[in-house]
Amino acid sequence: MNQTLNSRASVLTLIVGVHAAALWLIVAGLHQQKLVPPSPLPAVMVEMLPAERPVVKEVIETKPQPEPVKEIPKVQPKKEQPKPQPKKPSPKTTTSDKALTAPKSEAEPVQQASPAPVEPSPPPAPVAAAPRDVAPAPAPVPITPPRFNAAYLNNPAPTYPPMLRRAGEEGRVVLRVFVTAEGTAGEVHVLRPSSSPLFDEAALAAVRKYRFVPARRGDTAVAEWVQVPIEFKLN
Image 1 (tube, rainbow, N blue to C red):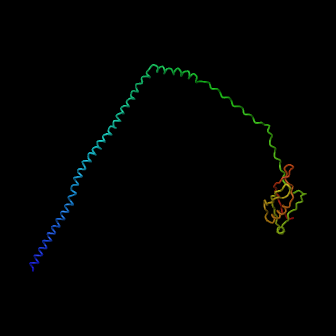
Image 2 (cartoon, one colour):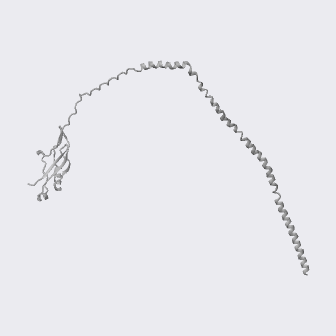
């Protein structure tokens, strides 16, 4: 039994070895087939390069063609043609010498004519004097100030404040009155007050009722301001 098993095992190992070798050969063959095809490609690339190289050479050959452009500066020596300009022998003729002397003779009479006498400017016309027949402005007519102390006006004296009379006080008030052309008191203001407002109020009340002689400009009655002093004295 053992021999049969060993023989079978050896047969199997041989079969497996044969199959493994066959598989290895197949795989190796396939691997070689895959590697062999790309080998001719480098030969193709080498054949393509020589065809491109002559094109590059042709381009290089075309570059020397613009070199003839450098011949343009060679034309510059043609500018030497203006050098013949020194050939101006024409001014060396004798006629040129006569032309130089001729203007000298013409310039001399010009110098003689230059000192022309300058005519003096005429004197300025006299300015007409202003007429003196203008009549002088009339002098302003003086104004006669208004009056309030005429006897016929019958202006009453102001009322003495009883409190101040009992206290024995006296005072003086100066009022500023605007007298109209009709002789009435238009406006009354305290110009200089007294020691007590009672005196001031009594003076204002009295003067507002006064009659005045209006101010006059010539024969015309006019309105004017006047100062009216009022004194409060005990008898």
